[in-house]
Image (cartoon, rainbow, N blue to C red; front, side, top):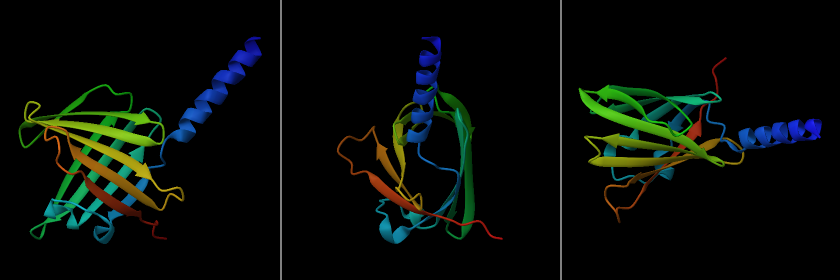
Length: 153
């Protein structure tokens, strides 16, 4: 009976891990396939390092000819992570909902709450991120589509 219980637990753990999207790598925004109300999203690169219990995301954007980089790391169990950006407190939480990574971002004392839903295509070649401002009900969500970049040899 113990062996059966142990095997069942292992199988469930493997199944849950397989449900998670494969996000590791460098992703380049495909502006032609994306819809966004923010013009800064014309040139955007994500570098994602995914671990079993955490995720690290580095966003690099070009705005007015200048490169801006923003990086954060958080657990993926839904517990809040805090950091400061330009002196302003920023709170993040991240968790998996089957094959989607959900990241919640709170800025300016909860005045702005952004939800990002990360989902990869079945072949793993593209990543779609739906960005919703939860503080503004009725506002249309942005859809950002990224292409996975291949490693240079």
